[in-house]
Length: 594
Ligand code: GCB
Image (spheres, rainbow, N blue to C red):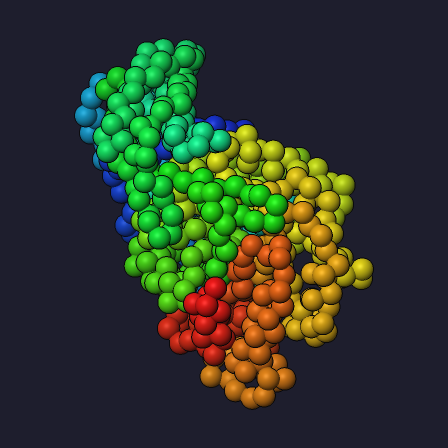
C-alpha cells in the first residue's frame, strides 16, 4: 500500500490512462423521442482540488491491503454533502463560485433489466469540461468539451445495484476549446441532464431527415443508421412513416445504414418558416426498436448577397444571447428558453445567435415550435492552439456532436466554426477543416464564422471567407474604436460577393445609468450607437442580417469597471432578464419597420 501511495503522488502522467478511452461523436446515439430515465437529483460531491480521485484511483474503492487490514482512506462518498445535478457547482455553493478544479460526483442507482438483449446507455447532455466516467469500480471513458452531449454503453458493467463516480475537471487551458481566455464565466460541473436510455441490442442509432437538396421541395431525404452488432454488418429494412405526408417507406439497410429520397405528392408539403413553424410527426422502426421525432422541412441557401429561405429573400433580424443566467448560471430550463424567445419576439426579431458554444438541446426544439431561426456555434474562440492536433480533434468532435444533435432541427440554419481568430496558416488549415467537416455531416445548412476585418485598409479581409457560405463580421466602431466613420468606409470598400451578417456590434450600458450620448456606460450612449449603426446598415446591399451584442448582460470575470461589476453590460436587457435599456426600443423599431 505504501508503494502504491508513493506511486500515486509521484506519477505526474497519471492522466494518460484516462485519455485511452475517449467518449466522442462516434459513440453518440440520437435520443430524441426516446423514453429516458433521469439520474438528476442530489449527488454526493467532493471538490477535489488536486485531482486525487484520478491520481490515486479512488473509484476502485480499495479499502484494505493484501493482508486484509483496513486502510486509512481519503475519500468517503456517502459522508460528502449533496449537490444538485444538473447545475454548475459555482451557483450551488458560495465557496465554489470561483472553483476551477476537479469535482467528484457520486451516486448509486438501481437497474432492473426489462428484456434479455437490452442495451443500457448512460447519457450526459453537458458537463464542463473533462469528464471521466467510472461505474462499479471500472473506468469507462473520458469526454472533452463543456457543451455537447455524450453517452456510453454500460450494458456489460451495469448490475442491479450500481455506483457511479464522475470526475469533472473544469480547469481552463490554452489547449482546450474554448481556450483559457474568454469573455465569459468559466462554469464547471454537470450542468445538464444525466439520463439512462434503454434500447434493444440492435437499435436505431441516428437519423437525418430533411428536404433533399435541389429537389424543388418535392423530395425528402432520409439517412438512418442502425447499430448494435460488433461487426456492424447489419442488414434488413428500416421503415419511416410521416403519416400527414402519406409517407410509409421501407428502406433497405446495408452495412448498418439506409438512405432514400422519398417523393412527396405535389403541393402537399407545408414548408417550415418563422411565420409557419409547421412540424410533422415522424416515426422510424427497425426490428424491435422505434423512435419518434417532429421535423420541419425548409430550404436555406444563398444567392449572391442574399440569404433565401424557401426560395425567398430573408433579412435575419436577430440578437446574440449567452446561456448565462443570473440565478441558474449555465444551467437552463424550458421556461427560461421560452422567455428568451418571447423577448426576441418583443424585439420583432426572427433569429438568434446562440453564442459562443452549443446551448441546451431544448433550445433548438423549442425554436422549431416557435418559428425562430438559429445560428449555432462551437467555442473556437480567439487564440485557440491552432497548431495542436489534439486541440483540433477536440474542436472537430465538439462540432460533430453539435451537428449530430441538432441537424434534424429546421430552426438551425447556420453552423459557425469560430469567432475572431487571428489569421495564421495553422488557423486557416484548422478552420477550413472544420468547415469541411460541417459540410460532410450536413448538406442542408449554411456554414459561417465571425471573420476578420482589415482595420488599416478598412475592408473586409479574411481568406477563410472563401470557404464559407456567409461571412460573419464582429465590429465595435463607436465603442472600442471611437472612430465610427470607419464603419461606412469598410462597407463601401468591400465587395464580399456573398451575404454578410453583422454578428456583433454594441456598447456597454449599466441599466439605469443616464447621461449624454457621449458618456461611456450610459444607456444614452448605447442608444446613440444603435442609431448610428442601423443608419449605416440600411444603406448596405450585402448585409443579410444582424445580431447585435447582446440580449442580456452576462457574467464575465474580465469586466471589473465600477459600472460592470463582473458583468459584460452590452445587454439590451439587464442581467435580471427584465429591465429593458433604451436601445432595446431602438432595435425594436428598426425590426418593426423592415
Ligand atoms: C467580441 C466577442 C464577444 C465579447 C464582445 C465584447 O468581439 O466576440 O465574445 O463579449 O466582443 O463585449 O467585447
